Length: 360
Length: 256
Image (tube, rainbow over all chains, first blue to last red; front, side):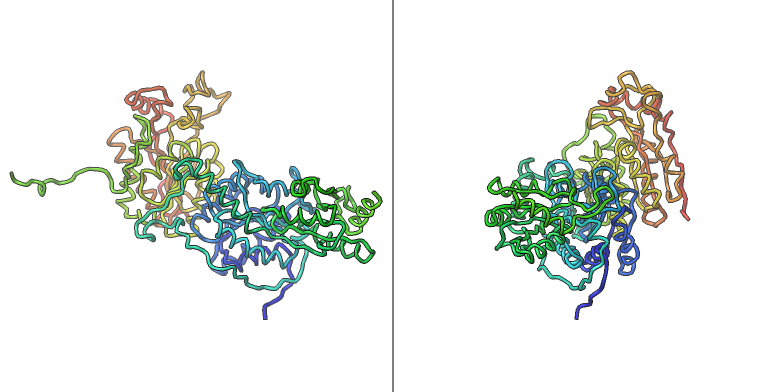
């Protein structure tokens, strides 16, 4: 029987990565993700792996880039301001098509924000390509400890399959909450050999490999752009993931991801017990975004309430999906129970918002 | 007619590692000569098969991967030491080499470089100092000489506005993880030979696992300096070497 343990989400990140065969971690301390590098610094040497503490998140992402070039499974983790420092490197990873997994345990922003509070204020940053030049990374948004553990494994698979950075986004609540997880190994199928990996040419019979700026290697800049454009189109066709809960029979569709989706699910149960026909749509991939499924669900329900612990970021993608066909409402971070001192959005507050909408 | 080909002995020629790519450099640039130094040293040490090169941004960026027949990656501005760190840690048997210009290593990447030294990485860095940003059109570099005119110091570099020239191997020599730090040039045949010896020593330190090796090459940028190629040789002798003395600043067989 598969072992079950009780761990915090940050620990599930690290364990999920090791389960996926990741032995190389390059990171920098920042609250609220420091448990991840701490765990890796302790565990990786035991399995012949390597942990390096960089001088900054800029250092981390370029160690990830160098490590990714060797063909090994590589990762880093950080929190919001650190991700801003990594933005340049993410753009290079996308351009050079280097597989890597980057975890963002979101803290409230902008600016220095606060590491001791949850928030979902990095949605735009992670989904719109936070570096320069126009690129995408697949973004996975787990909502529980088990899902963190599972999606970490998926993240490494997708990074290898599509050759590029894959992001896993959690937050303070998910990172610090202890939940039971089953230590199961997920098999997603075979992957192609990494013939592009830098190893020294003797390992390839003297045939060298080079990774130089894309405009050198492609016959024309447009060919290189088209390759990425086609890859992103393929990902949009095949990798959209979401979960629906009572969403096919509701007159108000709540859209929420990550920790807010857990809260919204509680609100759906609470509402259903009181005669409110609520349903939940939870995007699991924030990019590619489940545009069609949300549009369909929204049309069926007739109206949408986005619940997110931010100023209103996810709501932009929901509105773009719904295209004005039904009204889209937002309950953002002002819905916290204690806005001045932190707080979280409670399910009761979501119900309150629903009732307000019902009253018109 | 008697076939004399068996009597012909090859005394010099293109190194095997030197790829027949298009000329990447301006007339009078020293990077082509430095390419030869790198090729000959790697060949003589017999490490081409395990060599992984990391080229910084600038004129070093396009040139090195296109002209030297080993594994290469180009790197974002100044980040080669971080990328090299991961590669070397994952493949300790590889010979990992960064090639970085003065803007790349000395300005945008100085923190990245210094932190690689702080960590005591076992790498080799070739630092190309031509005192200007060549690729972007001859702007001031951290190594621009005082009084030197560039496109962003039109009246000459002055201390008050732009501070002082940066001395990389002297700085590196103060770090405990550094095994070798030297400065050389290739502007005369004798100096070419010394430069080869320096680079060979630096790479040998890596192979022996002793520590970081840094070799600076003071080199010419005729368009950046607004001088003819031959005038550049005098400028190196008379001006550049006055600010940047040649020699070994550190050469140890043990770093702790």
